Structure formats: structure tokens, C-alpha cells
Image (spheres, rainbow over the protein chains, first blue to last red):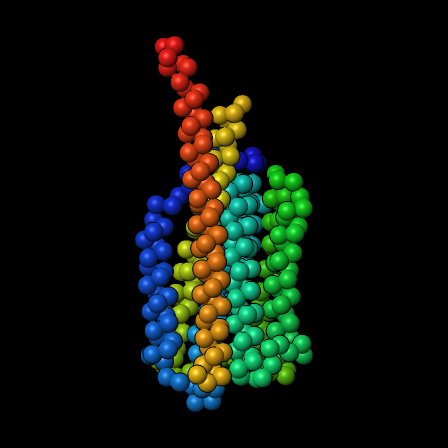
Length: 235
Length: 55
């Protein structure tokens, strides 16, 4: 594996269109969450946090899964581009993980009267998942750039993804459930309009994460190509 | 504004601020890359100038 990105263009041609569609969808998701979906009879207006909180959490899981997939490809095919893709996916997952914790904490305060409950396994497990992936950056940047760093980062990203189903199932398996379980074996426990608003928000947040992933990836590839060009011009 | 409305505004505000901060960071990085590209173009022009004048 080389440490540069030879002949790999920083693809960003379709990014403005993608960003425009994302902005439109996020706007639509806000309209659905506030003006289309009815107010929850039990929680009132604070339930509207659900329309962004849950899609953000699902997107964080998806980012960590994507990072693990790219890490697997790196270990299998030994192509360095997968290292960058895995790293950017972990970065996105960590951002969305932080947003999950922040929005969840605000919703918890509004609904339960507490910012955080250490007795709730599902909350603590998500925090563990978040801290695990936060430590990824400490590990990655403590190793010199090159194949060794790429391989160790990939193995770490692969190990971390095991925590995703544990965190996801904890919400369903926890005995003392305060955290609501909206999606059960009987389907979504909400009205059709609420579910539609949730689906629109889910698509919008997933597309937002994908757009940010592509923007960051394009920037990092451009950075690497420029570094290579500088080395070529100055030697 | 009720307390429920304040919490909803805070939750959506946090998401908005984080995305905004991300966009600002990316914009700053893009500006740096633009500067570097201009420097490299200048360097390439300087390197090719003597060979052009000789040829």
C-alpha cells in the first residue's frame, strides 16, 4: 500500500446537486415534523424531537457499519482508499453519535425530567459505543501514517461494529424500560402521518450524512493529491 | 413559549449548529486548499519558465 492517492481524482462534480437535494429534503422533513405530523397525546410537543433524534441515531449506526465494511475491504483488498473512506465514515458516525446523545438528553429532560440516567443500560451502551469510536481517533493519530496505521484502524473499526447490534437491541431487551420502544414486532407504534414524517426525516438525515461524507472525502482526497503534487514539484 | 417548546427548539437548534459548524470547518479547509493550489500553480509556472525561455 502506498501512502498517497495516485491518479485518484477528488470527485466532487455532483456534490452541489446532492447538497441542494439534501437541503430541500431536510427542509421538507422539518415541515413534516412540525406541520404535518399530529401532536402526540401523551408527550405533547416534546415528542417532535423523535423525528430527528431516532433518524440521527440510526444514521450513526449506519456510518459505523459503513466504516466497518470499508475496513473489511481494506484488510481484504489492501487498497489504501478504503482506509480514508473508513476513517471518514467513523468521523461522520461520531458526529451523528454526539448529536444522538445531545438530542436524546434534551428529549429525556423534557419527557422524564432527567438529562441522563446512569441506571438505563441502553443510554450507557450508546455512550460506550460513542466513546469507543471517539478513542478510534486517539489510536489512529498516535500511529505514524502508513499501512500499519491503516490496518490497526481497520481492525479497531471492525471490532467496534459489534457494539452496534448490542446498543440497538439493548433498547428492546432492557428490563427497566424508560426509553420508549416505538418499533416493535407488531410494527411502528404511531399513526400513519407520524410514520410518514419519520420516514421523510430518516431519508433526509441519511442523505445529509451521505452528503457530508462525500464532501469530507472529496476534501481529504484533494488535500492528499495536492500534497503529492507539492512533493513532486519541490523535489 | 412553553418549556416543551423550548426543549424542542434546543434539540433542533443543536442539530442546526453542529451542521453549521461542520460547513464552516469545511469552507475553511476549502479556502486553505484553494490557497495551496494557487501556490502550486505559481511554483509550476516558475519551474517551467526557464525551460520555456531557453527553448
